[in-house]
Amino acid sequence: MINGKRLKALRETAGLTTTQLADAVGINQSMISNMEREFKTPSVEVLVRIAERLDSTLDELVKKKA
Image (cartoon, rainbow, N blue to C red; front, side, top):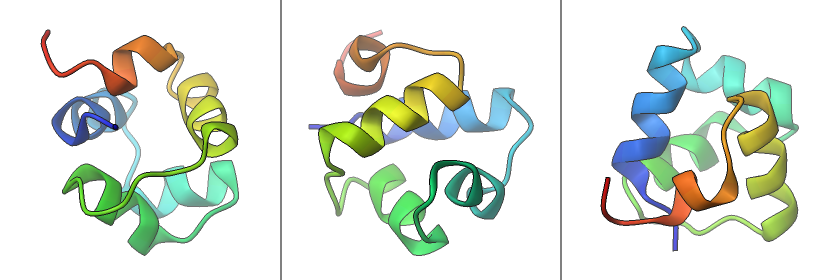
C-alpha cells in the first residue's frame, strides 16, 4: 500500500530522521523503517498523520509511480 521510496524521500526532504518522524506521528522508529522498506503497512490514521507532518498527501504516499 505505501510507497516506501517516496516516504523516505519526503522524510529526507523534510530533514527528519526516522526517529523524529516516528515521534512526531506517535509511532515507533522501527515502524517508519519497516514502512520505508515496504515490510509494514500503517493504518489510514497513521498515514494521515505522516502526510500532514511531511506536508504531503495520501496519494503521494501510496502511489507507486512518480
